Length: 270
Image (cartoon, rainbow, N blue to C red; front, side):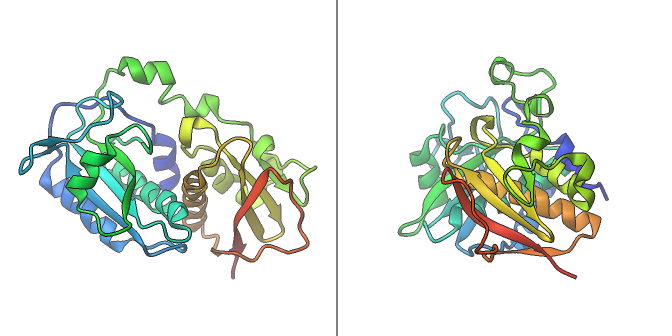
């Protein structure tokens, strides 16, 4: 079984796909995997794989030119309940990583797609909306012009340094990978997380066995990005045998800058 650490390193945003369908056996694997998923935040999330062309309605699902030749899309919906965006980030990224392990390409898209056509194809309930999608297919060898323009697979070179996003004990003490101990790899996997416009809006404070997640509001307002980062951190911890869980119980004495929004804390357990 492939290491989740290697899968995270392999994952990249793909917008240009081969003109061939995904085999039914592979789609069945993904759908069965989706059925096993849960999240620690909210149960009100639905995921569905839709073919790019809906044969019964002849609707072609579109992304305003952002994606080329994708045979299918993973669609995520929510009903606006508490923490649903966080849950979408966390859970859809698990699906993305699983698809990566199967040799498929994906790309997070939350704004540049035709929400009306996706909503009609998904059959939404009252108050439910399509929040995010990902194209799904086999990556083409040659990168599309758009991918080159936005640097779709340059994440390793463009990520913020470790010391700019991770802190220990207080906000004046940067955490380096060399002194992060057992959290060094999980935090590095978090650092490689995708985010809207690659803004990487996360800030983390390590206090003993607590790792608290914050959204830097001066950079972005997308809580979904923190969900993605939390996914990377937790799956890496799980593989390394570091047990813990997410809760909303950060030490009330901890102060943080007003430009940060506290999201959740990962607590190490025995």
